[in-house]
Image (cartoon, rainbow, N blue to C red):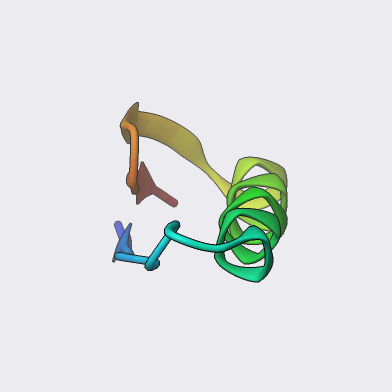
Length: 41
């Protein structure tokens, strides 16, 4: 089964940029990056 993960994080402040990096690191552990904010797992 293929799961598509997409996300949109507000990066106007430092906490949003940190959250974006954390989400991306976790998604890389489970699947392959298709686009910037899209992962196929």
